Image 1 (cartoon, helix red, strand yellow):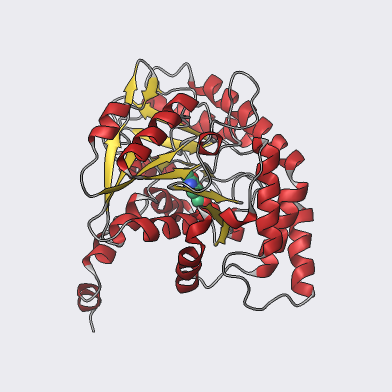
Image 2 (image 1 turned 45 degrees about the horizontal axis):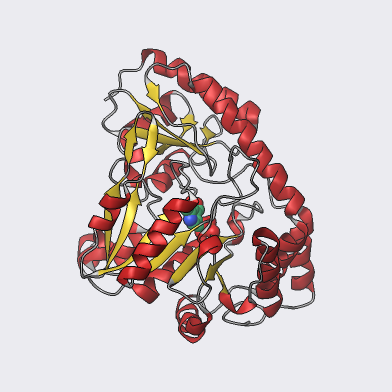
Length: 397
Ligand SMILES: Cc1ncc(COP(=O)(O)O)c(C=O)c1O
């Protein structure tokens, strides 16, 4: 059969879903040693050896069999302990479900709450990996653009709530946000919680960057739905080992959900991945139990790099951005740019720097580029030197 015939015989959703612009940029520039990559959301350090050793020891012990669909009890208990230390209240291991990455935790959540034609409300700019999987399964992401006003991103709660229809099943909120670093205040979280309670909607939260928070009062985490919600209400929270513990390549995350849904979640995990490898989970137990110092060092580095990036780009008259309050991205607008995807590819070729195109983050994203700054500061200086030199003469459209 021809490629066209084969394409014609898969579902329109699978055929028509656009690429993630982040992956598109990365694939364009991958394997080019002269390009400084700042496209994906990860740091430059490998996983600390002590976490890896726990996984290697487990492999050596022969822990290579099928395992618990909900995650090994040891890891679920370590997750409860970690949350207790973070939130100063008790957590039950029964609310934690181990998944193959934060991405599968998102998949599990949306497969559980959004059927064909059901809508999930999503403030944008947002990471493309909510809208994409929703569309692929026949559900509808209802994107509500945030506004960039007086140099700040603002979430208009009335506009968000006005987007609700009889088909709405959930409000999704990623705070701190990838890509804009915007972080919801406790009052905003309470308003979303109250609205969802009143209207029988799910809260679908993504707090994978909660430790990467640069609040003025030296807080060690961002405001969270876990501060204000019951464990047994309509709250699904996606999380991951990827960011805090430098484990992006491990593909392990977790979903925090009401324990009443355990059999349903277990079934979805069974029919997607049939569980996360036990030896990887052993490495994650070590990360939770031994990783606090590492996290603090990562966050301190991210904060210092954020300040560096703001200093290096702050005097560029063609750029505009808000100093991010959380996560580890700078999302900056370039005057006159209307095609961020083409510009991203050009910058890879001409300035040898890899950003991600703003358009991939949905309405409100075009006109911007995203850079990840959880990198070696010397590389950031080189990259931004190359980029600002390029910017001096580049004609951009
Ligand atoms: C907002 C957000 N949520 C979830 C994830 C998922 O992380 P992973 O699938 O790598 O564990 C990411 C990764 O970039 C993210 O930015």
